[in-house]
Image (cartoon, rainbow, N blue to C red; front, side):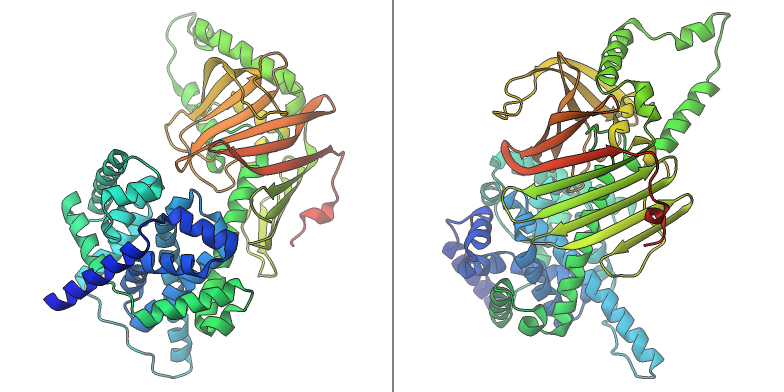
Length: 548
């Protein structure tokens, strides 16, 4: 036993020495830019034990775990360009391994059900033990942690890296990683306690480290995975390079990732016409109604109480005047509320890859909507979502039509009407004063602007309207042109990244200006450009709102 541990440590040391000069980000870029097989092999060796450990804990069957292991790395082949920041490879693979193993578990359950129906005797499952259940619970709660904390735990506890090594891969000072590691363990302990499992942060670190130590990857599995990935990257079908089951897992996970991306983008882009980030889209209308009811239920004392309750405080008057100016610049509040029927098309192209996405919206208030999302490039697919009164339908690619889709209360803030979020009772609006809007050379230059911060009054995180990746944020900042009052930029922090969306080329439709171009900049580098087509119509074809 001791000799085996020594040999394992020697092997790990040799691998780390071989890759010592290459961070995850460098290796990933080498693979993305040149399809460098050696770089991909280094990533498999570096993160393989963590990935296989996750698969083993979820599936409790070695053959199934190895299939899920291979599928997780084939997903990396297809989605490598989507990892941002580049140094978050381990964190990203942890999530993919979880999702792949769970999908494999679902497939196994369905297969056993078919075997029972056919009268065959299914293979027995591994015996369930308390410690296995606790490990599975720990994985579930770890996956639910914010990225910055989970990344530190994955690298240090699950992969055995030092704080200094983790800091080099993530591009952060060691002190920052140490703080995130301690905070992440504390949050994980708190989440586990709520599930009935009481462990200290130190014990959690020990358990996770033991999981990593017991997850040695057989060399033949590493070699076969790297070979399959190389062939898959060259355009060969997954079924021909890794077998039917691994192919089914790979395509299933990729499809689920695409669906999630399209859903997030569809929801986020519902207000793209004006680019105003308001409250979380799922509950905007409900919370507004609840806020109004709460205000109406408060007792009012004195003869002049009603007048006092409706009269804004002096500091609010200046903010209300600024909001009125912004609304007037975008056509006026009345004009925005009268806007009832329109179409909106957003074409987005990546600056760093061949990915191109198109989002089309057909809106007829109060309760008709059709949204079509098409992705073309590294990830391809379509999603159609229709709302017709109380009926909802959703279809992905050529799959079955599901009875779900656009949420109730969402259509009130679609397109240019999204600026009305500045009047949403669920939102806290803070005037931050005059600031410079940005420095995108020919777009804005150093334009003077008035900055407004939006956050939810209840303190909950919400989805900014430009977060195509679907991240949750605590606040967004909007920059309105000091002279014209038009929106110039939206800005927020998303998963350790600083995101800016610049809005330009406004065109007026029935006195309502709509930005025709936008540029997304991440951590100072432009990575997406979009064009927007907007049209106001009297009435849309009823066939658009039929079941797809």
